[in-house]
Length: 335
Image 1: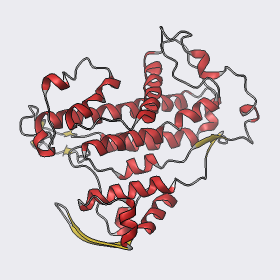
Image 2 (image 1 turned 120 degrees about the vertical axis):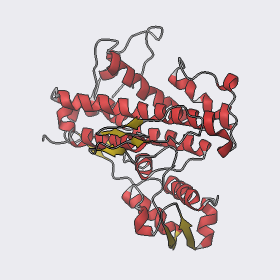
Image 3 (image 1 turned 90 degrees about the vertical axis):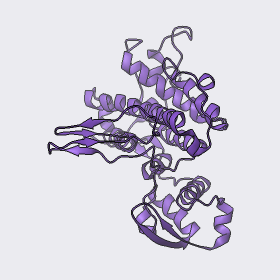
Image 4 (image 1 turned 45 degrees about the vertical axis):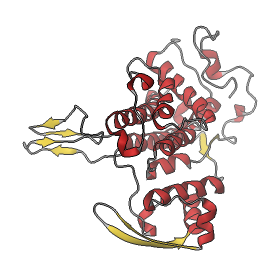
């Protein structure tokens, strides 16, 4: 493998964000809605937890757990006596089936009125969610693009395929989350205290992806009004996905600076998914925590001498339609 042309920043995640994530995860586990300051005032955090299959005790200082989160850019729940954290109706990831010619039937977590009941009567599989699979894919492919970034300027088609995959998987993760929420609301609103009105919410088919975010406010009464920056970043990701899916316009250019800026969209993708989950009362997953806390990607200045001295208009900006009427600009004007 050639030398990396992109590298990770060594700057640790912000203390405030790591603290908010820690409190959010703990609140989801305990059912208590404490703030960061309330957790800090406690000193030693102690509680007993139970779920469907196990129980345990946890005891630690809140700040110690925050420090663990920052240092590791993730949370090893078991190391702190905590259970696995996830949302049962979003993140159901246990495949059903196998090689034996036995009957397997699955019940989807969207309420008794949901009309689909997947079933296999011969060797095969049933998947009830792609959430954690897509989350893992986004994390893995982003890292692969950085560790293999020497290939970014070699014309390597596998590297480009991974870039296309990152855009596609990231957009799918959001779209799938919104559809899972839609179906849960349509068939099990009472469980959450939501209100699903067919006329108000509208048909999910034929709806632009960016308009699907309005479902959140229409159903929960709490619109996604604190995610303006994350939505703008997500729209860039979506437009990149569209460009490379349809190849319209029929060309694609980038500088290493462009690529770094695109890889830095992924933490904001994690933040957008977190804000969606806040609105719908869903727990995070360890992979989403990692996504939010991903390190910034930078151009390796010692190996890319032209990274600083670049023409004003170069790279991706030169491979998009020149007028907003034909296609919106979806990338940075400079590297």
